Amino acid sequence: MLVSKMKLARHLAVFTLAAAIAFGADLPTAESLIQRFVDASGGASAYAKAKSVAMEGTVEIEGRNISGTVVIAQAGEKSYTSMDFMGIGKVEEGYDGETGWQNSALQGPRLLEGEEKAAARRASNLSLFTAWREDYTAAKTLGSEDIDGRPAWKVEMTPKEGKPENYFFDRESGMLTGIGITLSSPLGEIATQVLLADYRLTNGIRTPFRMTQQAFGQNIVMEFSKVAYNAPIPAGRFDLPPAVKALVAKRK
Image 1 (cartoon, rainbow, N blue to C red):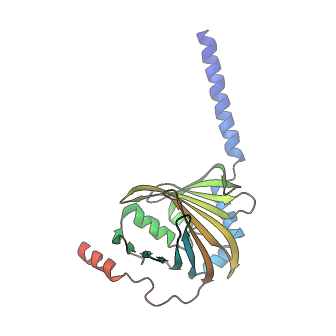
Image 2 (image 1 turned 45 degrees about the vertical axis):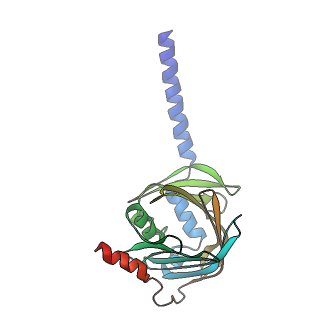
């Protein structure tokens, strides 16, 4: 009986290994999915021409009757995001190529460090997917998962600093439809998912005009009315606010 059980165990182990190999062989590579997205959204040449992007629109916290305006700007490795909620005030975040920061009317200013700062730097990179190997050490396809009711390939990308991130590429169109990231913060680790939709061709690049950020059981929906690549960025847009400058001075 013991011998039979050992044989059965070996057969099961071989079967499991063969099934895993067969399953893995059916999955498209992460590299091919990333390249497919780059091609489907405009191509490497279009991204190479994009030196900056400016976005404006509205933002709403669903179910809370809280809304306002949102402004996003990126250029080089710099970025700035502002959400101005009626009755609450501004929530700002930026990266000036060296310092990552946040500032809000409710919580005041703070500097981003470690994994948070690394994530802010990656998010500021317009060529994140065309030159992804500069920021990530590995990428692998984990399987298929539904995003907003549509099947998508789930790709895990491991950054040089920080926790693995999940990117979801629509199986039919190849477009990026979701991002899953766990961020470290003073509040602990925060699991965040971003849904991307309403892609429109803008200056040769298909860009999502609707983004939904899901965290803490809430949905923050951003809908953009203006998106422009290589448009003039207002002078001083990426400058540190005075309150953040004061924190930097104290740190030195």
